[in-house]
Length: 292
Image 1 (tube, rainbow, N blue to C red):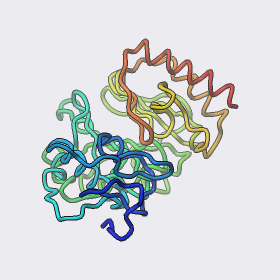
Image 2: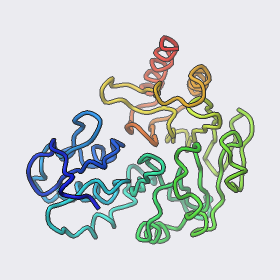
Image 3: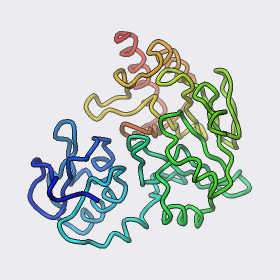
Image 4: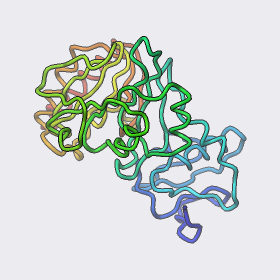
């Protein structure tokens, strides 16, 4: 639980606060941007909620926080915030919430599909939470879990045990050691479920993979994200753990694919036309080449 005595001095006065345990994962700023801000290296409350809707979003950020760094001066009812996850983003794609400290607050997603289309798909793992697991079961459970890379696996084993799902991950990120059921090899794209293509994208890690759903939703792990500062797609040069030249080559290969949504583990979500996404991706490739 967040501790009032550790409340950061950058918080404005009022009910909500962020304490010094914040790891600057950005989750709260994405979930409740009207309330939380980046003051440089950590988040803080920039404006107290001024409506019921803003209070609800702030409470959603509170329960999603991977380090329990968000608190309130009085005990507030968080049941509606807990029940709000998974949160629908578009069509049948949901944000799971309940980010995990072990994955530095990375976002995970749920694709809800009928059984005749292969059942539900969990992309990367959230923090295991009984109410979240119960809600996912109400939505049909999990048939397949797609893991982008070793950094964002969080509580994958607990979810696999809970739902008996098949996990997919690349060998180069230690999949066999983790007991993964379907281990990907090499750099060739591979269909891993109905309408879902695994595209190996080594760079951030040796075995990083992005997953393309219906040529529309691209789940990018830590390979690609939207920058609100640069207003374009970016890669994370300072968080490239394996090879920047390899990540550049992986990015170039993505130019062959159509997509309208970028859904990352870290960084911001973005939605645009396929043509606009390709233009932004080409710009990202050019920038990466200059930064090599």
